[in-house]
Length: 393
Image 1 (cartoon, rainbow, N blue to C red):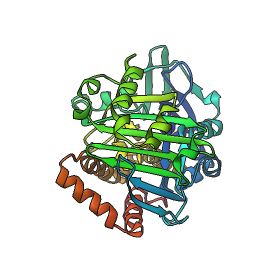
Image 2: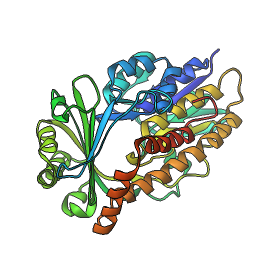
Image 3: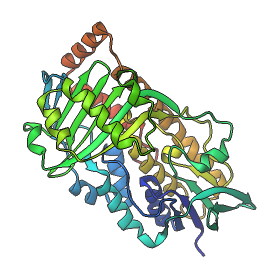
Image 4: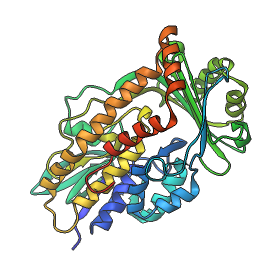
């Protein structure tokens, strides 16, 4: 009889873990607190390590076909002054780099898992362990298994029970708004992506499909103090997003205004947060993956990617008759140093983005102008390699 894995959370990490564990011979059950299956958010970057992991899961080519591989980009000041324009040779990172809508990735993963494996409207409240087995407590019942994977995000219930003394998530003093729009690709002016950088501000607008653009605008919280006090998970979210855009759009060029004003589907993220790395993630036959294990700032470009890599690594190590508890600790030992490095990198990049001092901004801009594309890409390759795993990703 196949061993059973219980997975809390039907997001990108949870679905990826279900596929990987099923490939390793496990029976899987996923529990999702939302009453319906949906992926929040708009777009994401999938670096070569993420695409390699998706290939292991059997959905890499599907996602690649639904997304966009950027071939050119432009860096601008907020007023539209071009700092750098460059072609991006395909394969320069050692593999495909794909920008995709989250719904495209989510749909491919859900198709591979099968909707029958997911129980919606089923909120996890805790767990107990006994004799190498685990019981997951749910608001509407319980489930038993041989493994419990917490893939339930930054506010993970599973993490909170494992680490009850942990402080709250750490705010990084950056407010973010994201959006997606169809039919506005012509506003990109012949490139696949635009990146704006200003005092305490960054924004990117990039093709994520044949006709769609994903964009975000991140602003130092002190530039929008009234808005930054509003949480992201209330009914004020739409009004907050509009307030950020109304405040910032006049400071940008016409392209920013044309794309954001054409957008009707956007989201206010509130103040972005991460958490200090943990020395261990799990206990017994329980572990964590993705944002439940290592929430990191989006400045790494690796948040979703690391959840997928976690899942593939976990499945690869739990194949055959692997003893669950020691294998989970080995999995954590493999992944913790890599993800901790990315958490720290995200903080450094956020500080770089938040620079407002005029002299520091000038020096930052000069460095961007001077750095050859090849040098920047080599740095990204090194980061990508550090973010991979010993199982070949």
